[in-house]
Image (cartoon, rainbow, N blue to C red; front, top):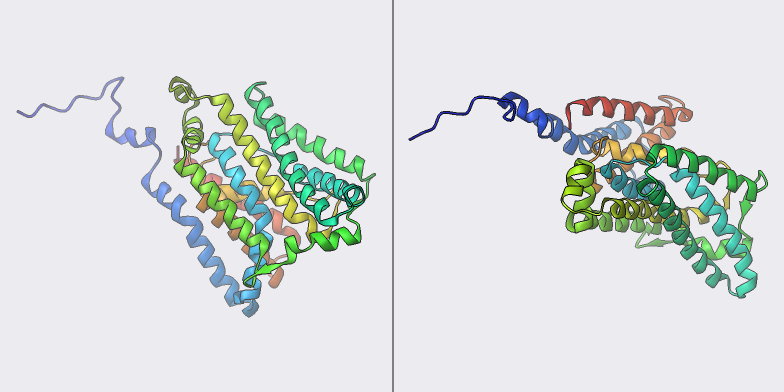
Length: 343
């Protein structure tokens, strides 16, 4: 015998409101998953129509190479945002790491007697410093219980100030012999594709596996969805937060070791606004601003999409290239507005 449906009560919300409690509207979720890809395709069509040089293989590789730095950082930022955190210091962190690596390689080139060994150790130092700075952020946020916004806003100024101090207000530059040894890390190609592109996609692949196929990735998403419930489920919330910020720091270190040979120098303007671009890549890629949801594939597409916007501005005269950061800011605001219906 069929039982009558229970009437709505304090513990049983109406069917119409259940959707709002469990994650937003279906159209919003579908838009978040396919919107970045659709936007990228439309932008590519627009770029092709505006300038015939846009649709060349050479230009595509140029876009991907320039995307690599921000894209690698965005992979780590994706984990942090899914966790429900933020990091405003990644650009300044990259600048300080670049300066430290250059100073170390210049010293090690003479001390070790081997430019190649100096460069290899410098690359290791880049990743090590990234992990150390990420650990610092994680401990202050998780153990010190300070808001991520405050911690990373403070270190944003600290990192860049120390680089300016080390460079005496100018620039730190690699010695010519060492720069020649380091240059292939950025300029070399394998099967016609620049090395940074391979590293970018490799980091994205590893990030996707960690996020979707490991217990750590599931815990990151669980904490971002509901930290209190994650604690009740015996998740080591503090430990996961520390590891997540360390992961972002490692990504910054990898991006920096690829960036240093591009110019062979570091100055107070190095990495300027990288945090804006990394955060924008994650948000445009469909991650929820309040945490709990996001994807590495979406982040990858978001990073490429923003680079394509900059590339189109460089190839056309639609608006000044100096407004590129403004366009990214408008994109972040627009995507945040469209996310209002999501959890």
